[in-house]
Structure formats: structure tokens, C-alpha cells
Image (tube, rainbow, N blue to C red; front, side, top):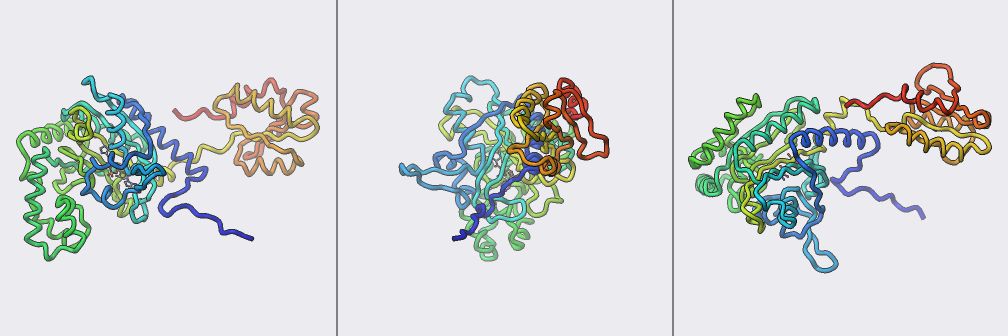
Length: 426
Ligand code: HAM
């Protein structure tokens, strides 16, 4: 009986060879920039106890509506992580990373899960590279993180994204601002669409993010955050802007920028690329000076951001050829050649670290093996027949160029391949 093939879950995509190699290249290039700034990798599980994410705010859509939450067989409430910050904080507290007083700079990379409505650029499983810096409340730390982000975009060679910057002020400022917004929108509550009326009750700041035309129009006359800022918050933000101007980082102060997660205090920011369509934010973050303490750790200030890798991949694909096809395909044809071929392949891999060599397994006619060599995308076929085996030589066929086949002693092969295989671009 024929069974229907099973498909991937909606909003969760496969990355096939080619695109997967692009992705790795992209990740490696970003990570090398993070390491230049002293960030160190941390890995933590994709699944956490659900209460870990409570700190992200019960009023945020991510927690309220989008979390993949379930009970495991032992009856424990667990969630697939919708983002990395909360898990990073949990792990750091558990292992005492935030004791001691020195600044911790951490990065992580991996899959996040949100049960959103899938569309272009919005997935249910997506990858983020995140950075988090703990232990400094200085505006210089905010500036460094924004400089780091700007360097990432330059290193990737993508069009310069727009940086929107705002401050939500101290927690008290934020509360004051929330109250001011709520008072304003309550006066117009009857004009608000249902979803936004709900937001008004849960978290009035989120109304500034609304895409509903009526709400967008009402937002124009809504009070700006600047009116609720304390002198301390204003001074922090002014210093940050000054540092950025001095370092040549372009930015727009956007007093309407609020973030979807509740843990932010102070600086918030978002980089977006207009060409990407509706989901055009490629990186976002901000300060969350109270989260560590509220999750049971010491009172350490923190700031970070996360890059949405899936949204960047398309941009890079247009620019780079996939670097994952084999350089060489080894063909072995005739008595005793298969086992000798496997040994030769091992020797070559040991001698030439960067060589990508696929050995034909399972024998077959020379013509068929050469067809497989061609289809593999390799540049060269190495041919080991009975004659070559007897004479300790090897045939080298250029698969992509019209050049005569070479025959050379096996001992000279590593040096010849060294000449032929391009060194990786640093
Ligand atoms: P976020 O704004 O929720 O922040 O996500 C950061 C980035 O992840 C977004 O700008 C976007 O590029 C990407 N992203 C988010 N949701 C999706 C999705 N459904 N599909 C594809 N890409 C998506 C955070 O997650 C915070 N943890 C950032 C942070 C770190 N703040 C402080 N530290």
C-alpha cells in the first residue's frame, strides 16, 4: 500500500545542501566579528521550564500567544525557547557567571520557536545569533554593541540597514509612560479595533507597534516617551547618541520604537532593511537591567541583541557561490582498486585538510562512475584503474575544463592537488 509522504511542519523549513553551506558561511563570518569584541560562546537547551520565559512578560505576544508549551511525560510544564535571552540568563545564574562583578560577553546561535502566522520572513522555527553583555550599565556598552552590529553588516557586505534607536527610560519612567499612553488611548477606545483594545488593557506600549490604520493614525498624536523620561534616563540616552555620532554610526531616534518583549528598560533598538518586505527587522535588542535579578540572580545590568539569520540568508545567497561541492571525486575501477582507493582517499584527506574528496563506493563501470563524478559538482576526477594500481600512478581528469587528462605518480598527487585546490578566502 502506498503511503503519503510526510511533510515538514508549517513554518519550519529544511535547509538543503547549498543553502545550508551558505548559512554556515554566514554564521562563521558573524561569529568571527563577535569574537573580535571578546564575546564567548554559550550553549543552553532549546527546551526550558515554562517559567523561565515568564520574565519575558506575560503581556508580550510571544509569551501570551506564540509559545510552544507542553507537559512532558512527567507532568513538568516545558516550552520550546521562543528567544535566547531568558535561557541565557537562566544558565548564567545557575552557573554563577554573573557573580564576581566582571563584565560577561556571551554569544549563542540556534533555533528559536514561535507559533506565529507563517509568511515571508516569519517562520515558526528560525535561527538567531544573539549576544548578551552582563555587568555594565555604561552608555559606552550600548555604543559598543551598536558598533559591533554595524561591523557585522559591513563584514557581510549587505546593504546598510537602518538603525532605529529609542529609550524606554527607567522602569518607573516606563510605567509612567504606559499610564500616559493608556490614558490617551482610553479617550479614543471606541475607535480602536478589538485586538488593539485588548492590547490597551494588557500593555499600552504595544499600541505603538500596531499596523491597524486607525491606531497608526491615533499614534501620531499620542504622547511621546520623551515626555516621561527621568533626568537619569535622558542623560544615558544623550551620552549614547553622542558616542554614536562620534564613532560614525548612523541612526534615527525613533520615539515610537517599542519592543515586543516586556523585559526591556532603557535603550532599545532595531536594524531593518526596507527591501525585505513586511518582516524587515534583521536584528533587534536593548537593555534589560532588571531581568537577571527578577529571575533570582544578582542585580546586574544587561544589554544584548539577536540577529534573525533566516532573513539575512537570502541577501547573501545572491553574492556567494556555495562552497560545499567536492573538489575531487575518486573513481576506482578494476580488481583490488576499491580497497586501494579507500586507503588513498584517507591518505589524501590526512595530508590536505581543506580537500573535499568524495570516493565512489560500490564499484561499477568506469563510464557510470565518471557520470557520478560529473554530477557531484567536483572539479576533478581521480581515476584508479588496474594499470594505475600496478604502476603506483593515478589519472587526473579535469571535469570542468577542456584540458588533457594527466597521469602522475601517486606520491606526487598531494603536491598537485595543493596547486589545484584554491586556498579558502580568509
Ligand atoms: P526579537 O525582536 O523578538 O528579539 O527577535 C530578534 C530578531 O529575530 C528579529 O529582528 C528578527 O530578525 C528575528 N525573528 C524574530 N521572530 C522571527 C520569526 N518568526 N521568523 C524569522 N525571524 C524572526 C529577541 O528575540 C530578543 N531576545 C533580542 C535580545 C537579545 N534582546 C536582548 N538580548
